[in-house]
Length: 193
Image 1 (tube, one colour):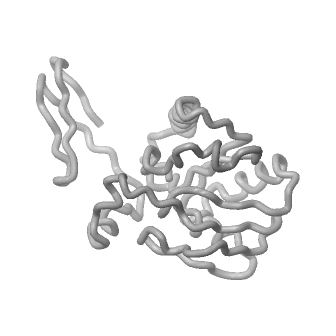
Image 2 (image 1 turned 90 degrees about the horizontal axis):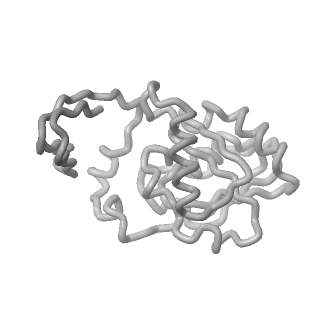
Image 3 (image 1 turned 180 degrees about the horizontal axis):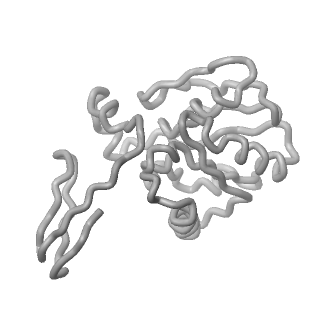
């Protein structure tokens, strides 16, 4: 989930998938502002993967419930995958089932804004072979796991985020929706987007 990148990372993913090819699919691309280029996303994700010591065979970004960027993803995956069975693996609520549904030739599996909806390994046929949608991995230490369902639904944007710009002076802070605070210390004047 490109919107919640840090929370989407599975700790020790290389251990979980030892000897398997890892292809990273960044979901919810359409939620990010249009001013955020794929180059910026690549730079951030490559840094993130390097820190996590994860090697991938490829990366794609999809949005709009799996339809935006889907053909690029499929073409790239076809060129890299010699296997006929692909498993979608990741944290809860990152868009795995939504993407699988958009690729499925047999119909909708399941989706929900609530984490933990996929309870078993579900397979479907696609143009690139069998895809298996796995239950999401839950991490109860994440702040998002502490939220009630109504708040969780509010925090799942449904359309592109519009950047807001602020001019801050030294030692000012931004309080974000009562959920967080970002403090800027030591800067004289700072433009924040």
